[in-house]
Length: 84
Image 1 (cartoon, rainbow, N blue to C red):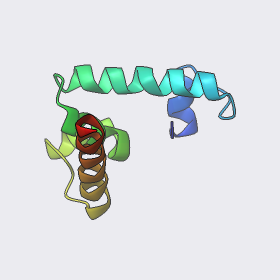
Image 2 (image 1 turned 45 degrees about the vertical axis):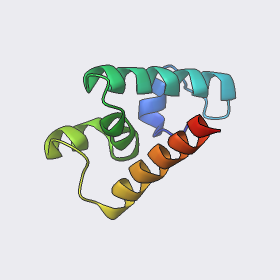
Image 3 (image 1 turned 90 degrees about the vertical axis):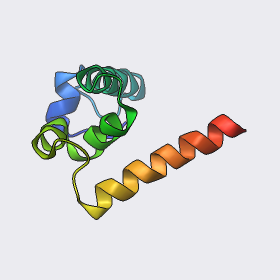
C-alpha cells in the first residue's frame, strides 16, 4: 500500500518496509474510507488517491486529471478481473 508516513503510522504501520503491517494498515484505511462513503467504491478509490478530506471538500471525485484517471483505471481493472 502507498501511504504517507503519518497516515501509515495512524493505521499501525510505523515501518514502511514491513510489508505485512503495511498491507494491514492499508486495508484498515480502505475499510474506513469505504464506510465513510457508505460503500461507494468510486469515492473510496478517489479518497485513496487524493485524500478523504479532498473528496469531502469537492463532494465527490476531485476534478484533477490524475485522480480522475486513477479512479477510472482502478475501476476498469476491477471490471476486467471480475470478467475473467
